[in-house]
Image 1 (cartoon, rainbow, N blue to C red):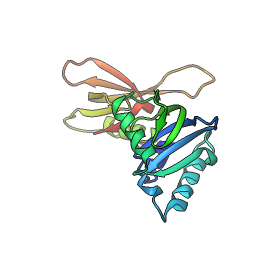
Image 2: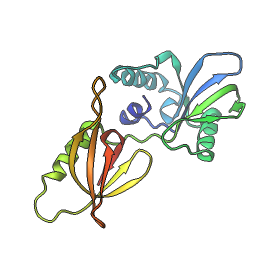
Image 3: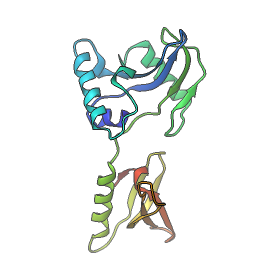
Image 4: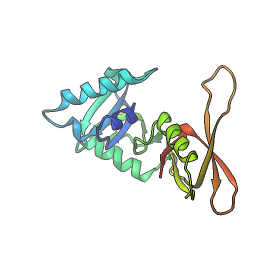
Length: 191
């Protein structure tokens, strides 16, 4: 859902699931400049549109709490994210307050980047495979921040029956000739 927001042009300064100390339900707090005074309604309309684009949303609009990026909760979410970078998964936060909000528990998301869609990755790799002349290596960036430098030379399906078939990009290292693979869904950029 957060990636959809970023793709829709919403600046997600910080985000996390918070359960308030008063026994409240879990809420997804999203700190964004889009949630400023005078444009909060537009921001929630964008959230609603993003949720409608998801094939199987498990988040309801009522779960989402938009706050300005300058709000103390958003600032504390961003500060905690910086202290405990957790890769691509949400990180459990052990504190008892975010801003002025007393919490029982929280999970803070890493910085959200839009990246390429699955179809864009496949199209880009297919275009690279059809190059003529001298083939220069590409830089393939993964969601975890790792970068593979090499020449994409194939896409293949892998996996079992009954599940969506994962697609894998095959990459030849331009230095030592070794081969690597990366799940298409893990690729965020190809340059």
